[in-house]
Image (cartoon, rainbow, N blue to C red):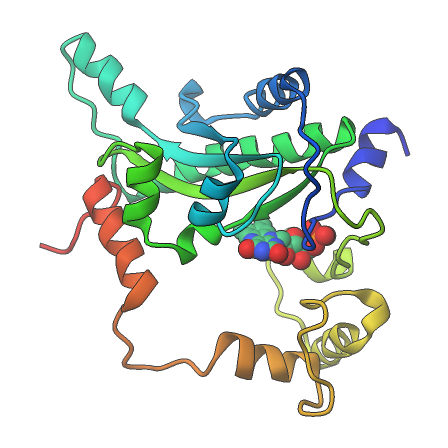
Length: 256
Ligand SMILES: Cc1cc2nc3c(=O)[nH]c(=O)nc-3n(C[C@H](O)[C@H](O)[C@H](O)COP(=O)(O)O)c2cc1C
């Protein structure tokens, strides 16, 4: 191990809550600057980071409280404004552009997580934003209607319970394929089912699975947590709102 690997292997999400202790402006600046060092497609840095310090606002918009919330948004607006400024038209707002901007954005977010941890600051990545009305998020954060989409929030701070262990991970060989993709065979699938069942591996969502009702963790996960898929389903609720927002933002074109 070296200090970089030590930091990466010490990463953990804080589920319980953060204390009132504030991350200093100096540390915050270090984290934000490190985040912008992540690779980005076509040197565009197709993201913006909105820093929220008011804990009540965080709670309303994201559902969590911490020292700071960083809202990472896919963002082509800067590009569009630059193009306009020079009298050009800009046309990267489409679904491929959205995926590319998403990659830029999450690379920056994860780089922020690592930088924060190296400074002794803990974090929680959360998509709590997408469990809220997206219109509210857009309005409250002053996000432009087009070319900007809030993707993920990063809560930063110091945990109330410092003993929280990181979640476990699947064995590396379960997620790595050499040269070509290969489906796991039945024996490997059974091994994974057993791995999820073993509390010591901490692979599942902690504390939610009721062992008395379900034989396997994954029985609970697929039946209760995910719910039965509906083959005729039409987008409703937050899914519909998400899709509508993507269309309004210009990142997704409805079928014509
Ligand atoms: C896209 C994304 C969304 C997440 N949303 C939440 C969330 O809303 N609430 C939460 O407690 N954890 C959330 N997490 C954190 C995961 O639960 C956590 O990474 C996982 O359980 C592994 O634990 P660890 O990070 O401590 O190793 C999210 C992580 C990701 C990548």
